[in-house]
Image 1 (tube, rainbow, N blue to C red):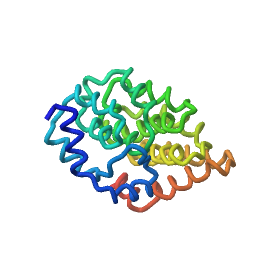
Image 2: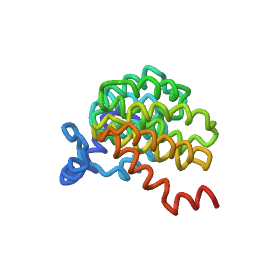
Image 3: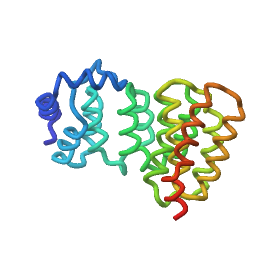
Image 4: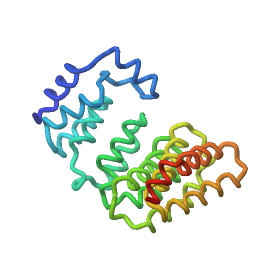
Length: 226
């Protein structure tokens, strides 16, 4: 299963046109989409297996689900910095951004430098990518030192004012995931959230208040301090 036309025909065969409305409801760009549930794309990805060349070809088609499939079958060990830059510029939906970050980008040696670069960007989905990388790293990179995440907190504090929907949700996600990583980081994140509130910027308040609500919950505190 390495023929691009065959793969596209397979995607079309499992599409559900009615599902497009649900995708649109969740803020997904459906201008070039088939309407396929993610679990079904994952099933196809398992049948194909890892294939970096096909991944790159699928991305170039521009179809939403083809690009999601590309993130599932790509080989993170072969992802280059230029690929990260190119794909990030193409993001038109939060799910495309999040899958590329979680499945590929965060596993590369470039993720830290891309956090620093992308969180300064003007474009909404490019900036989102920087914060999603923080969140994905907090969840998946078990060996990453605390110092990495401490270095991210001033960035979160600096950018918390950005009230664009897909940016603020990613900033909040990053803050919460770093705070749930371990008890040491938890306290620093609490301090960061309080610093954000001290800015007295209404646009930044939601990021901090929502994070504090979860991080101070009994469930989180019990897990971090058994």
